[in-house]
Image 1 (cartoon, rainbow, N blue to C red):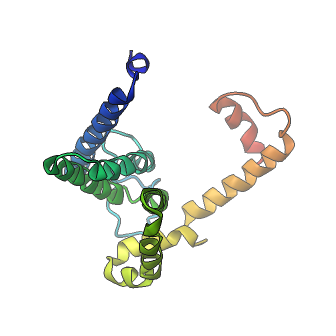
Image 2: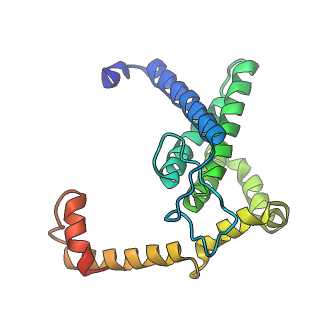
Length: 203
């Protein structure tokens, strides 16, 4: 029914607007409810100040962060659409709510993805925005002095080999690359169970 409804731009735009609105509601509920503390999501020896991470209706803050990164550019685009000012204000608050929830997921990958998507969005909107991108990149060190230490430390830790989760990811990539090398032409089969059977030999 949904696929057959996507006839013409009208339904696509309606679907996008509904996606933005429902994501903003989910983000607001996630912020109000607060986050969930799970030691498997945070290296507690490294980030003692992170009490909880927002998950909203999902079980994992990283998955929520990935979804919010996808929806956020749509909200920004709606702010630029030729609609009534009150509508633009609505999408502005949707974008702010989604961004706030994105920050509270404490997902470093989602933060990085949001920055990259914002850069792409600015350049696609108008290539003259490259000056804004360059100024933003140049002001990053100054921004690090303004933002709370917890956020800066969390973001910079993406590049730190002292973080257990970063080390774990690198080890996973190394093992997976070894698996790709040996099974490049045939593959390992379909589904998560196939991966779980083969990967331990390379972990």
